[in-house]
View 1: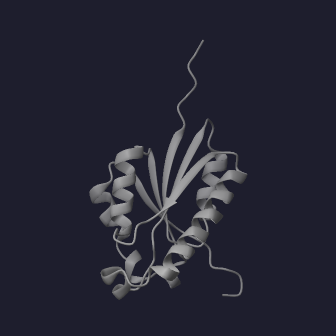
View 2: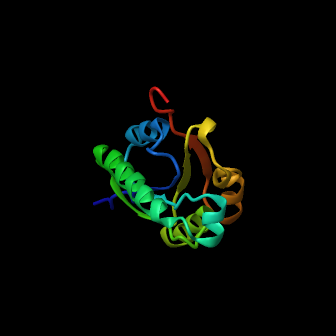
Length: 147
């Protein structure tokens, strides 16, 4: 009897409101088991990040993004889990720490539509490649209708 294939592990750093359609289509097309781990960093302004003063809004927003992303991936029937970031950790720190524990096969940085990118999303891909030992790619979520 042949042992089942281990799941293909995709680690997603999510700053967008939802998982990018491109990622969802890629997951749906994969043959074999897939496991997705979603990380929702706290998105704060520059002062909020450096002084951790703005997490009253950032925590519920990260929880909402995480819940929505988990629901999207679960609809595809894949094993999905996730967590939100810590106020004292940057998005790259969150990604680096999780990658060291979870050992992903692929890393996707799911950003907001390009026209809505913030200072904290600038250069995430290049910086992540320095700290993560897996292929890293960026995918932008589609802009919301009417906005």
